[in-house]
Length: 241
Image (tube, rainbow, N blue to C red):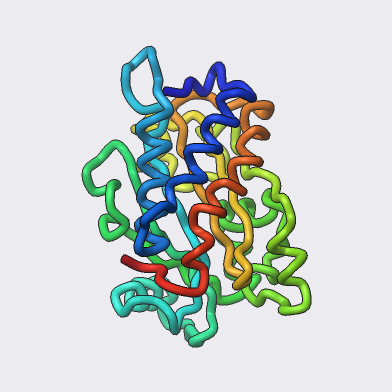
């Protein structure tokens, strides 16, 4: 078990080794993502309440609309309303989820986050958490929406920063304050990830019931590579279970 209030470099190294192994014998990226969210949910503990340190853990990946499952295409179309979605439109797609409520423990239980169409830079900018996630990781929005083939090698090999909101309550970058953040005791939000060779973005988002300071948040930067290694074999092959 790991304690976020005492998370050390040794803990980070141990955690990274475990994460790297989660891809073994998996049949799809979704299966690996499920192992990842449950690893974080079960292994980071709040000793005071004897419950998980996280209210919710999720893994997202960008995916072209044309390559989504039909039910995810429908979810994306519902969110876009009357705005047209092209086959090449990137959608921020929920691959796996683990959390306090039963419906938070499978991606199909999500309402409004299964496939979020990233139709334009302007529309992404109007979604504060997504825009801030991309910005704090160190990416430009256009790199996510339309990855430049000439820059893929650089984007794929880069080490990314973390998305960190130390004080989630009242933050303009964290939505659903009254519906989720306050009632489920979310203190901080932390995200980390990277870019696959395909140009698609992967991100792990942690909604923590314990306060995460900047020094602890920065240690998660190196865990992104371990998560990516576990998921990488399925980047251009079987994504969904």
